[in-house]
Image 1 (spheres, rainbow, N blue to C red):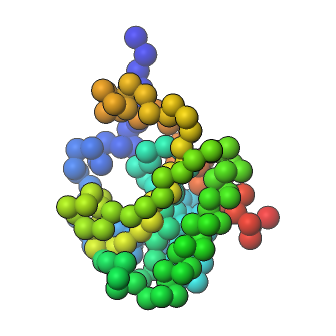
Image 2 (spheres, rainbow, N blue to C red):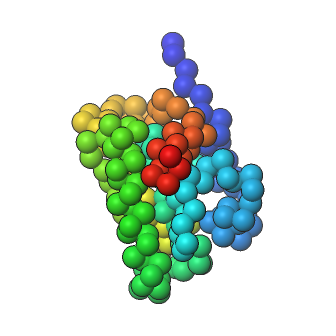
Length: 161
């Protein structure tokens, strides 16, 4: 019998995450988080999702604590979309992904894991990447650790070369 271990997801799946302010606001000022932040722009940063749906799952997050896209300053929203465009090229290069899911969940009832601070998800997708384990076992198998994902994406980001 094969066993799949993902102990880094334990706090997430059991709901035992610490209740301490906004995770995105705290993350940007914590030097320990630099391992997962792959790019810092003027108004947004790009970070590997700690609980990814697929390898290469990243988030584009405004520095400002904004809970709705309608409340996001135009310059921040424009830079966010520019970073998404750059990230699409980076993820195509690094993961050879032929497709992407890109989007936001705004508000807890819409599925936002961090309600109150908007962020754009980018997930590389491949033909047949949803399999029985995800569907019936509610388990995802990721071929690399998130720290390795961050290293690869950071190395491929245009201004890091």
